[in-house]
Length: 305
Image 1 (cartoon, helix red, strand yellow):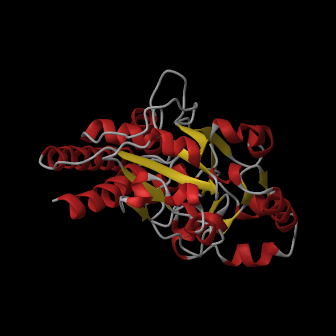
Image 2 (spheres, one colour):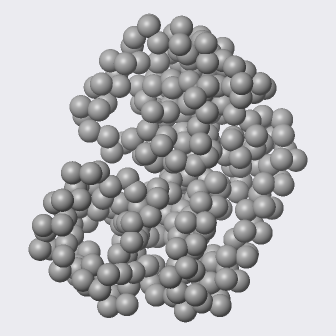
């Protein structure tokens, strides 16, 4: 699933114009240095979750999709400026990809429409974290090891998986020692609608493992979220619930919320139980598990220890 599925039509049209420009090629070719130049094999990723996993394994890709939005949705790890932007995940620039001379291109089911074209340029692999009847965190462990094996570093994959499992266990021990309220996690779509995360989400998987309670008990979609209005959030709000709003929060939403009676009347807002936290990639893999623990549990521990 792509974060940028939620981009506006205007943003997408701008991206399409940009990726069709041959003037990008000299700049992108000059970026084949540093981390990108040292990567073997030369890898391109059309998914943020796969990209963060590659970086965690020490194998920097030479190009990724939507690099220009990395700081908005991923933030960490920091993306080296030597990694080329190969366009939007749904509108890739085949000229740029060809110029980067990749050995391997990682796709997801969401971007499989590109496979027939891209497999003419390099080997392709499909990484699937979201599958019917499975949970994204379980799949992330499986697919992380598969990525490691495909790129030739199976031992790094195993070591990284053990590191994440240890971090989860330590987080579980910490939560057991704290008295924490239910937390509801949202991301703003606009001034009146949010995505609320629950069952089938990576966030929920981490919460279940470490012992946090989700304040949102409603249904979610295949990707683990549901788009609701603020009025639905008000109805579902528990008196002791904390609300976590993940960045990005578009700046023009903030003044609207400040003047919104609906927002100001939410119990969690009136009781000062709402916090805005840095972005945690919602459709990510194990690096997002780590970041969720660092940011969310770090916030809760500081507030309730």
